[in-house]
Length: 298
Image (cartoon, rainbow, N blue to C red; front, side):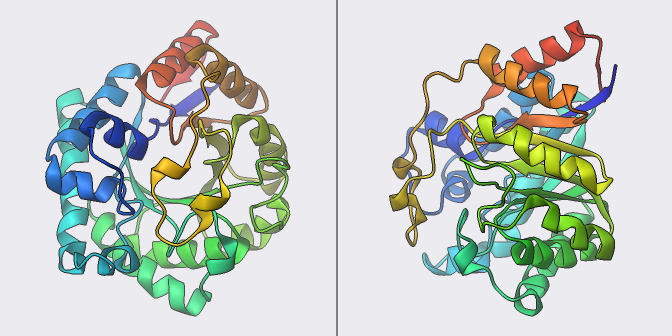
């Protein structure tokens, strides 16, 4: 039996659902301004469900996102607000890791907007320096190409804490990143940077076994946290999309999601959880399954 780090589930979709607000291209960032405390409550619900990690609501806090709406002066304050709400939830729960989330620059799922490492790394380093003093790990999430991942991982070193790298894979061929590159091409980054864990995220759960088969060969702790979308629509791959362009799948019950995740654990995954549209009910059921099958949640 294994010791499993149980991640939380999605934050952005949960915030949109609870706030009742019309989604905007700023996603979950705007909700922190309009509904203070909601992020803390969601972190708390995931901890109560059995998660051992709170992933900070900092995924999309990038200058390029904020500048479009005249909110860039709040860049630093928004990071601190997200960190504070995660810390408040952990303090109330009494334990847990904090993972400082850094998502793609410009847009998610779009390898064609990847910036040169020399340009991207300093942008990520700026964020990493803010997060580093307040989190246990940096989680570079939803990276769609090897170069995109490298810019994030290189910048993340500025935090001075362990770095986890998570990539988004093709929904139809999980052995490849969304760029078309094989997952195993991440071997160069494992060689060149101190990456503590390799994960796959924000792709359909059906693609994750192929992704993990590749990640497993790279010699690092590995895992997955899938989304609950039917697919990533073409409209979402345009500039400044909103979550209205993403279609929720209705068949992914907590029981079915746990079946997927337990298969990942059977492959040797030691970090599992959920991404967009995977909520507290899914994490609660997964925690129960892990314990029932003799695993320990770290």
